Length: 317
Image (tube, rainbow, N blue to C red; front, side, top):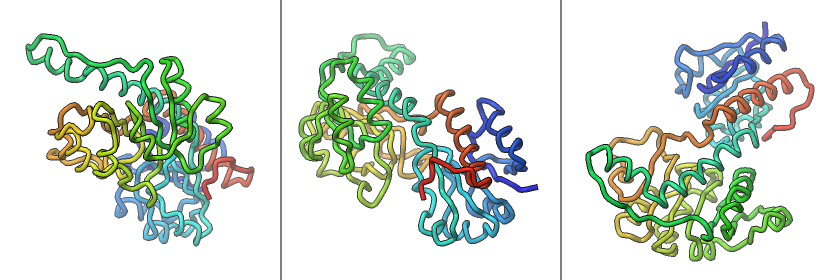
């Protein structure tokens, strides 16, 4: 029987439907006892005789792909494919797919949640009450503020729609932005520097690429308002985390909410853990029940479509 390897730990977690899609198409599903993310030594023995693999954040580099002698498709259980060596896959005629749109609303809702939480110091309030402290903590309101969205893809557009209910002035920076879509949503397209200087909140929704790596550096933080908040649900590498910690400690910006780190999990002595007014979460932006099921179903359908030649609409390359 033809085999498909599943390493994404959230695949099929909400329902059995994604597994059933693979089985109904005639594929045997192979898993590791410890569901992802797998390291290369764990991945290589499993990938040798499978035609497809559904991955989460597992590293799928040239060495791993070299052992996939039968491999025809790598399906990302998610959107970002920075953990997959696209050049190596292309050289081996291996199709790479992802699940665009499957988790967009989940991530956008969490970005909004983080904006509200950091504005009203909710996490700090919770900590104080649990430790026996009492007293007011004064925050600010989101309504009517200026929000800058960096990366105006599916997630950025979802966030813009949610923010309309708060009467926010919304700007966006994205070199590849669809001006018509931005206009329809009432979003003003601005330069990166203008977004930094004018935004009360900045929410990041870009992939980790050579162009975006450390785009939020000491220089960027120096251009932001001292009352501004940074929200990062994109990728850890987009933000210089040491520079962010310094900016928070020195009062260059008012606060930050961070769901992603350059290294995950971060070390216990990570500088952001000691910085003031920062909320940290364990890369859960896409982890709603609805988004998880959507991604799993879509990833399974992508694999079946590629391996049966019926046409896949979510091919990255």
